[in-house]
Length: 591
Image 1 (tube, rainbow, N blue to C red):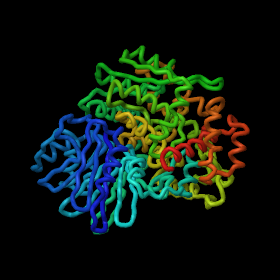
Image 2 (spheres, rainbow, N blue to C red; image 1 turned 45 degrees about the vertical axis):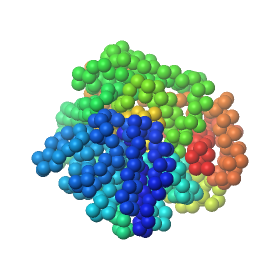
Image 3 (cartoon, rainbow, N blue to C red; image 1 turned 90 degrees about the horizontal axis):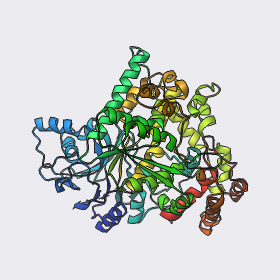
Image 4 (cartoon, rainbow, N blue to C red; image 1 turned 180 degrees about the vertical axis):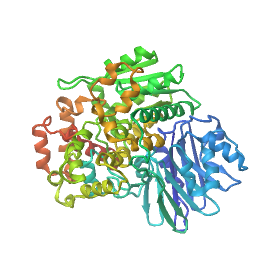
């Protein structure tokens, strides 16, 4: 895990080494162990390293292979790199390091753009080919690792977060009205290539982008998957066995491919608890687990300790439990928001930030349960959609998921941001494009390929990497995703969702953990807004900066402030928090 950045000049000029230094400085928290830079003609690259595999200086970056004329900066982990290394050695390649970074270099030389299809893991990387004078950028299939870019006349810059690009200067920070519509409809998700800022874009998951110094450009999607039933129908037992085996392998790889210990973020939910059980089943000893909780509100408990404690009692890991009082949450909110590459509405973003701080004092790598709900249909809105047969795919989806319908969005924003129903058009197109048999197949495909990327996945990456902590997500192993997509929806949605995981967990976890109501990493103070949190949000929305920015219609703000606890979205998020969060992010990052 690391932070990467770079600049390519397309006009024959020299890249700005000062800009590289500024970007690398804003990536320091992602990679506290080493800083490096490289330049060659029209290109300059920067890197901040978190040492996880091959801890020696031979694996420092930017990594240069003079013999091949290639240089790489890489963020992520390639879980099948030992097998790829063996294959490349049989083809005559020689290695000077022992990690996964050099394997990417040799793989590019051997297979060109097709190398990404051979990489199993999470990654964002850039390879400079000195001979061809071309820069190759790639992002992993599920978008676990971020890759942002900014284009101006004569040059393009890229980085692991938006803050680095903003630090380098020259970025148009005007609000993208289309992205704004997505932001307030899709629970903070702005699908690639857009971001909330007009001057910053992001490479879509499962895509690569090739840029030539003479201005040539080519972009391609290299991965997708069918959500259709296999030609030979499988029995329920065969599905469960296949999923169990694939998940076991995904967890095993993410435990073994590291030269440092690997722990687990244990929320107390089924997914993270199952990771603990599977690691114990695989014989992992000296396992560290970490849980965080918050103050209760009358409407909702603020921790899931009663369930995580049951898992700890059964498997006896070295457990670390933290309770964050509301006063601390409120004090640290601005700091956490400043680490968001994009504004994220999920109330548990701050939870992950505070947890990441504590975990990083003990360990460098953790496994986390993100993705299980999207892959196996675990959220409450999936059965609601499935049982609602009326209307088009888009109408069925929107009725149970959209935070605001288009008409409400028009009341939220001022005139200059009122336009077409951009989100409806996009989601309707994505649902129609999926190669899928049934409606829920199409919904889950949309979630996994698009929505999850810019909600829980981005949240975990940003909030853990803010502390130099690598989070691995085995439920988003692409081979597991491909297998689960072909599993019949009725099997996944049985017993309220995630039936294959619940069946797998029987005997491995206490029944109370398996049969408990679905949890959402609660932080009640950001859902039921009152007291100090209400004052904080009111002050943000009444600030001179917010008024001058001119995004929100004041009558909509007044409506929310008149009854802040009453205005929740369809998936139970605070609408007031949404407005305050975006304004806070803009003040901390873009002003």
